[in-house]
Amino acid sequence: MESKIGMQIFSVLLALLLVSLIAVPAVSAEKTSPRMVDEWEKEHTIPVEHTTEYYFEKGQLRVRDIYSGPDLTARFNKDQLEKTCSYQMEAETAEKMGYAEGQRYTITENTSEVFTSENDPPVTLRTYDYPQWIYEKIEDTYHQLDEPVNIAWENNNLNTVKSEMLDEGWWDVIAEDVYYIYDNEWKADDGVANDPVRLFGGWHIRLWQMADGDVVGAAHHDSAVPHHADGFENAEEYIAAFYDQPDDDMWHVFEDYYALNNYVADPYNNGMCTSIYYW
Ligand SMILES: [Ca+2]
Ligand SMILES: [Ca+2]
Ligand SMILES: [Ca+2]
Image (cartoon, rainbow, N blue to C red):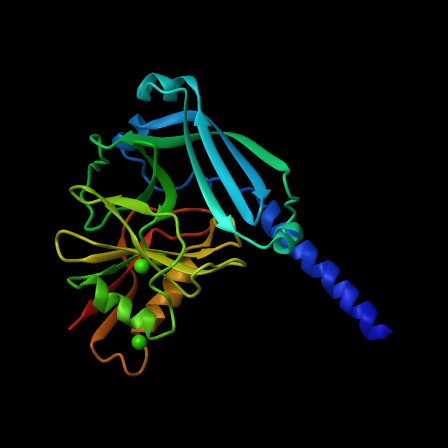
C-alpha cells in the first residue's frame, strides 16, 4: 500500500516536473548584459511582437513562431515572418507535457530582436577570430539568436573534431533545426548530440568548418521538446572534457581562453570561448 502511494506521489511529481519544463516560455535570453553591442547590431535591432503557437495533433507537436510589427514590415516589406518546427511525439507523452490533442496554446511577448537579410551580413567594429552569434533563417531573413559560439578548434577539420564526440557514443545524424553563422557567406550547421531526438532534453553542439581552417561550435544543453537552450557554459565544459582525457595526447584544451564578447545572462554564457588545439 505504502509503495503504491509512493508511486502515485512519484507520478504526480514527474508530471509536475514535465509541466514545469514546458511552462518555461521559450523566450529569448536576457538582453541587458555587460557585453558591448556593436553599431551594426543596434542598427538591426527591431521591436517586434513574437507569438509562439503550440499545436499537437496525430503524433506531431507543431510549434509556429511569428514575428510582426511596423518596423519589421517597413524594413522587409512583409506583414510577418513565420517559421514552423515539428516534433514527433506519442500522444501520451504530449499529454504529460501538457498538450491536449487538437488544442492550440499561444504565448505572445513584445521584444527587440536582430534581423537582417542575406546581403546585409553582420559586421563588427573589432574583428574577432570567430563568429559571435548564430542565426536562424526565417523565410529569407536571418534572425540573430541569443546563442553564442563558445568552443573553437584552431586549424582543424570537422570530422576530426566530431570523432572525439562519436567516441563518447554521440550521434552525427540528429533531429535539429538548422542554424547559421556568417563566414564570408551564410553557412548551415552540422550538429552532433548525445541523443538524436532529445525528447526530454540532452547535450547538443552545432559545428561549422570555417574558411580559415578553424572549426567553431555552439554548445548547449537542450530543454525537453520543444527545444530551447537551457545551458551554455555547462555544455562548453562538458564537451571540452572529451578532448582532455588521459589518452588525448594530441589535444590541448584552454578553457575560457578567447574573449568573444558574447555574454548571455540566462542561460549563462560568460563570453569567453574555449580554444582547443591539436599538435
Ligand atoms: Ca551532423
Ligand atoms: Ca577523448
Ligand atoms: Ca565559456
